Image (tube, rainbow, N blue to C red; front, side):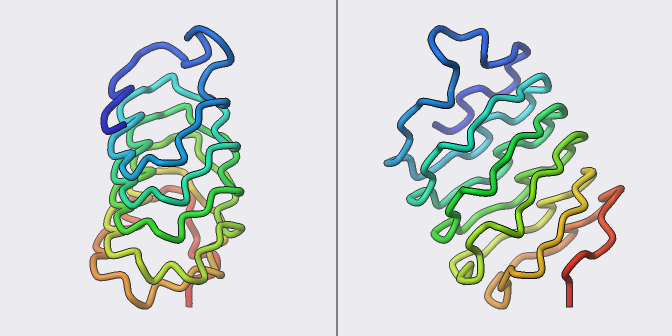
Amino acid sequence: MESMFNNVHVNASLFEGKGLSGWNIEKCKSMKSMFAGAALFNEDLSGWKVEKCTNMNQMFAHAKFFNQDLSSWNVEKCKDMELMFSTTDSFTSDLNSWDVKNVENVEKMSHMFNDSYFSGDISRWNVKNVKIVSHTFYSAWEFAGGGLK
């Protein structure tokens, strides 16, 4: 599913059926750049089962209007979250409810919230094994360090 909707300039709800919320993506291992550059994208993905996904690199990068609830996502097996929410002007979802206390598989988080307005509490995240964290919050306009120790 890499780059599937990359730079799409219409909202996914214009697609036939019920949009993307009912898609079965349980076997998907990479969502790299899936909605990158899809500026108008703001579709409900809360029901997606992403347990097997290992790559979410740039998944929502530059999806400026994306602001949906991702709190139910299980990202325990994800290894790459680089640039995942970079330059998302509207994203404010509660990610502290993600089951990432065992996020020990994540290796890359650099630029994850770069140039975004994310300001959530991430105090439950265990990032002790993350290898690449450079610029994770670079130019994160609203982030005040909620939960960082």
